[in-house]
Image 1 (cartoon, rainbow, N blue to C red):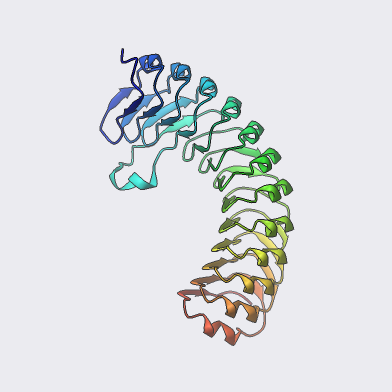
Image 2: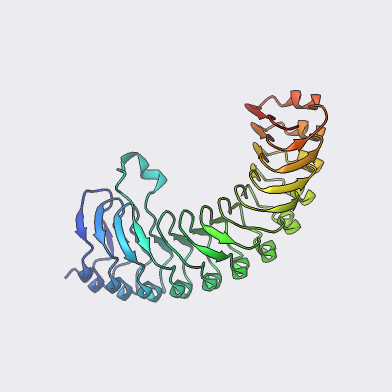
Length: 316
């Protein structure tokens, strides 16, 4: 009955039971935050009536069932959080505080043109990543990791020119990295690790000058490591381990002055360890084990004063 209510924040309590359908009557509501409780059952479809809603947060509950397609009616929505655990609140969460939302990611979410952040990680979502998400031109953060999503990464995501963080890791995705990702010039974090993706690493990745965190490990990528990756001057971490990459380690990686982690273990890399890696003064972790590298360990690695972990075992 609180028809004038604009903000309802009752997160981080011990509330139980189902989310009341009557919340759908609060037509003035702009922010609904129910995170980190013990709510069960499904997300009420009636919440799709809240046309003024800008922020909707359910994370850290015990919700189940499908994501209502009616949420696609929330045209003013800028932030949607449906994931199970927020890292910021992990210290107070029990093991049972897990949303287990199932079914597909609704294509109707592509109607939320004001959306900037979509967080649906750590659920049991299946099906494909909807190509309709490519309509969300203002999107800066897309988190769909730790689900059971399958199929190819939609090329339409290459239209999200405001995208800063793309987390699709630990799913069942297949296919190659879309070359259209060259358009994501604002992208700082790309996490595709822990899937079943194949193909070669696109040379176009070297054009993403804002990139800081690139994680492509634990997949089935083949071919050589592109020399173009040496152009990513802002790069802090590069994870390429546990793939089927071949050929030499590009000496151009020695240009990555900001790099702290270089992980290329468990591939089929050949040739010598480039002496140019000794130029990486910020490097803390160098992991090259389980490859087919030959030759001497470069004395230049002795210049890496920040190095904490050096893994070269089983490198032939």
